[in-house]
Image (cartoon, rainbow, N blue to C red; front, side):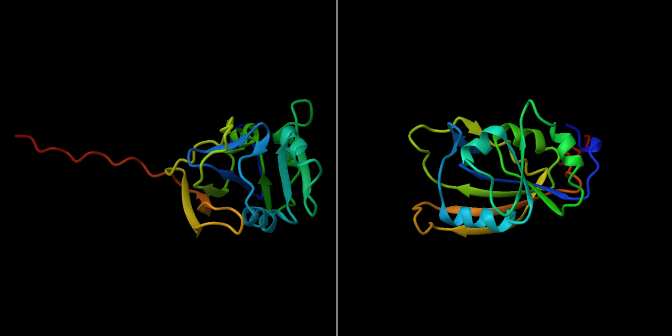
Length: 178
């Protein structure tokens, strides 16, 4: 999917909870359930359109209340078609799963990531979030927690904004000729 092919007036944001190496989930479920993260997710997405893959929708069991829920599947409308119909929105959220994140990462303007510093559950992870390249994404806000009310590990709410222009790698200094 090419960013230039989609005209839009809204901010496209991805929102996810990630482990230290980008772990996203296992067997169509989240790795951790953090009360503060669920509240954070709700406060950001309430009143907005949320786009998700079919399996993510099935894992939720029902539409998220107070939001326009859009489900993308291989047999339904294409993501580009859906995005083209949402120009009356101010911000649209991609809420998973891994395949939708991969498709939309090149289009996204903002990332809302909860970084979790916790051991993985016994089953590990079987899906991962795309790499957050610091040359493309700039951290613009961070809220750190040493632990949650019922979650005993550190986590952070981090917002990344796409850089307007990606910085170029530094050139090595010219060596004087002898």
